[in-house]
Length: 277
Image 1 (cartoon, rainbow, N blue to C red):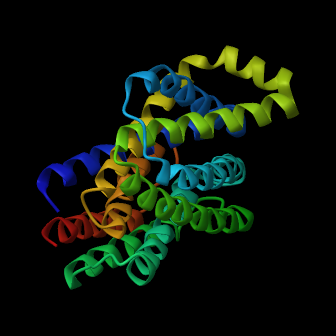
Image 2 (spheres, rainbow, N blue to C red):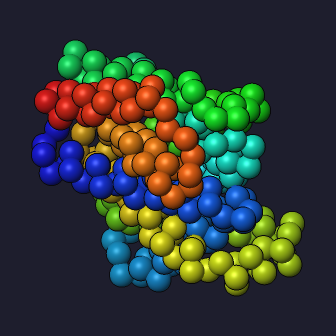
């Protein structure tokens, strides 16, 4: 992996942790997630006419990805309603890269070096270690996080294939966020029109940075998937947990134990191994 791809993925990780923190800090987690996705959809709609369009071969992948990511967004909100971000965020993000690595190598033909496998393993084990000592542990939150990891792995694999077929990471990214945000807003307006409208009007200022964060984070990751194996990108992107733990400690006032500090060092080591692979 080149240094430029490595640094871009670290920046994407920071953006990813930031928009998750915005959702967690919202007074209503589901409406906050809808606000972030809806804002990203509006931004994508404005930029789409001026961007290159993805090839038709990628359209089925866009549709499948949309379905998976809508469920993922709702599950993120539900998970944060019942448990701490500092516990469930690493749990759902740490399990997904292992699934991506196994499936991409077995079914998609990606090749990984021994060093890359070592880096992925160290990152995933360290991230899972950060989830082992959560404050006010919630069994429901744990199961939701594990379920969400399957959806994360699913849309990562689908989008990794789709963006490679699309011929344009920018166009694929914009269509992804427009479709995801539109579907979420449509569902919200049909089911809870008054409550959602009131929340969006009141908290739109938080939706703007959240929308920029989620679209920037995943857009950069999609571009990186055209430059490096999916498993490496997925694992390195999960260094976002370092930023997530810091945000949870400083802004959300959640406890960060010595075990999580030790695990953070493990994540840094795994990132170095991936950089060298």
